[in-house]
Each structure stands twice: as C-alpha cells, then as structure tokens.
Length: 140
Image 1: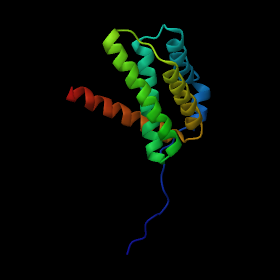
Image 2 (image 1 turned 120 degrees about the vertical axis):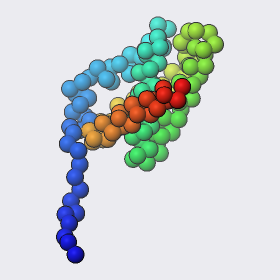
Image 3 (image 1 turned 45 degrees about the vertical axis):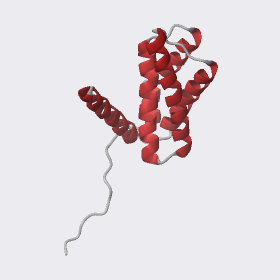
Image 4 (image 1 turned 180 degrees about the vertical axis):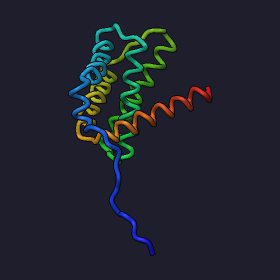
C-alpha cells in the first residue's frame, strides 16, 4: 500500500476581516442601501446590493450550518420579497418599519458573520452566487 499525505490543503486567501478593512466600501454599500430605503430614495441598485448580501450570507451560513444566521437570512428574504412585490405593483421601492428592521438586522449579521470567517469561504460563496445567478439568467 502506498502512503499518502493526510494534510488538508486550503486555498490561500486573506481572512475576511482583513478584506473588510481593505475594502470598507462593501459594508458601507450595504448600510447605505438600508439608509436609502429608510429615507425614501432607494433604487433597484440598492435592492440588488441587499439581495447579494443576503444571497452570499445564506450560502455561507448553510455551508457552516449556522442556524442563527440562516434565520436572519430567512427574515431578510421575506423583506426583500415584499419589496420586490411592492415594486412590481407600484414601480416604487419602499419598505415598512418591520422590513427595515429585518434588513438592518441582515446587514449587521452579515458584517459580524463575515468578520469571523476565512477568506476562502467568502470567495467560494461569491463564486456560488455568481454561478446560481448565471444559471437563473439562462433559464429565464
């Protein structure tokens, strides 16, 4: 029988906390999207920022089996679906107080979660989200 190395090899990536410190605009964009909703000047790009935030967080939390974060993602999904339905009906983006609270919680949880994760998880979640969105576009 041949011997094999049992050491696990990981992708080299900076911890996500370092990435947040080097690129603070990521967290700022997410927080500004909630502020835009709260103050009434939100656009579809603000919605997309929050949808990406929720999507990446849900993928990573599912991989880590983090039940608390998955519950926050579910609240965020409900709020985002309500925003989308309202936009399709009225052609305006707006949120109720409960939806704003859910989205603020989503953004806070996202920042807290990502600061405790390895950079490779962030990279894999971003790749999985991009792949899922591309498959959705092809199907539609």
